[in-house]
View 1: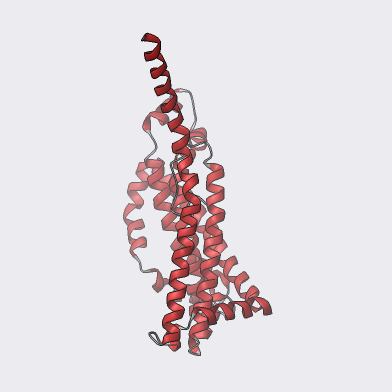
View 2: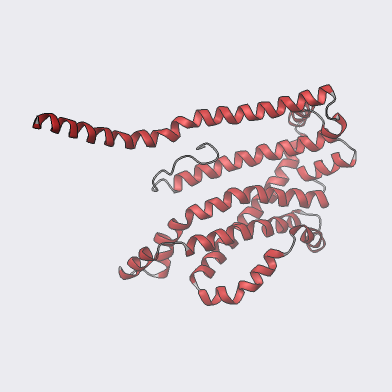
Length: 288
């Protein structure tokens, strides 16, 4: 009987130990299902749109239809006319993301670590953040002209505050016990930032970057829309001026695909830099 009890206890322990890898495998098993579901949703939306346009439920003049948009995308890429405009938009968005991200990261860290400076600049940051960004775009056009820097400046205003607030909050949320232990071991401020604060705040920082990618491209496109001679925003503006709904939607589709590709890249970098952290399940993107 005692041997039987021991066997039962051992089997129960083994079953409990086996539960851990199973739970870790669950997110990986869900990824194909999530991907299939995402594709299914896209197919339903596109098919419904096409059907409504062909049957006259919605007016093609105002909504175009997916088949025409796909044909226009093929024309843009086959002729190569999109590449020059896409390059300009990506350069503007990339500069806005880098400049706004670095400024937000540095200032966020500074204000999170020095409470006096944070208290002094708190009302000014709130005032600047409350300004409607669209109002700033024409001002930047006057200051920097129709070149790329007016679009970069506008994109920076969108990216900066997202990264700043996430960085500030991420640093403030770091466990005080970790900070105190590092100080007891003789860590200086630079070592504290590098080995404790930055790794702990990386999740917050990358969360802001996922959002900032889209906002950087929005900043570039809005700037091009208001005044430019190149860029995807310029193409959308030209299409709207000629009542070319297909051209407008084509520009939007191209930008959407670009944002998804960049977001996947950010996801890969995030997973690499945070590989030391335990798995938390599956993200919204299906664990890409």
